[in-house]
Image (cartoon, rainbow, N blue to C red; front, side, top):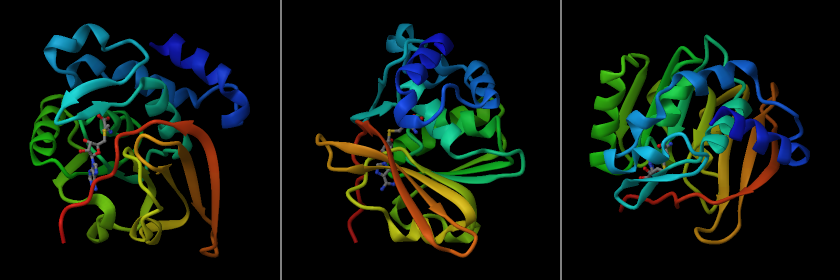
Length: 212
Ligand code: SAH
């Protein structure tokens, strides 16, 4: 799996602007047991570089994309990160290997409950999972050192930008479901100004909204 990620990083180096991902990120990818986040019948796909269904019409993202999004967040040991779209909990676990705390929000109740339990069983006591619509972020724990959204949004949710610390980054796929989506980095500069950059064309499940 790690070799597949390295190959795809090399293949996309012009878009992503680097030849290799952070060594700490690759070490975290090596440690987290991806098979434990995948339904038993599909476990033989666990270490292939592709997405895998996790039920409720959702998927665990391709390892290369998880590694790239993690790298883009510049995770540091004292960082507090917000994730929107817990899904299986895999991305949260990768982040939990690298940062102080991960807050993760999942809109499908059953997925949030299963991921919370799985992360607890695997010993990730620095991840907090909540069942909610992540569009509004998690103001009680803001501001964050980074925010990552693992579902495609039609636009950048303003609350997620507000909840970034100055100097922090939001990583989010923006675009229509089934259409072209751009993995986007939104940097909040020290003076609060935003710098928005498209990185790569991607395909994510849609960010859904709970009824008002
Ligand atoms: N990060 C996940 C991949 C999840 S797929 C992993 O590592 O397994 C995207 C997830 O986003 C799905 O589980 C979906 O239910 C969730 N999602 C979609 N819209 C959401 C919203 N508004 N708030 C929170 N979660 C959402």
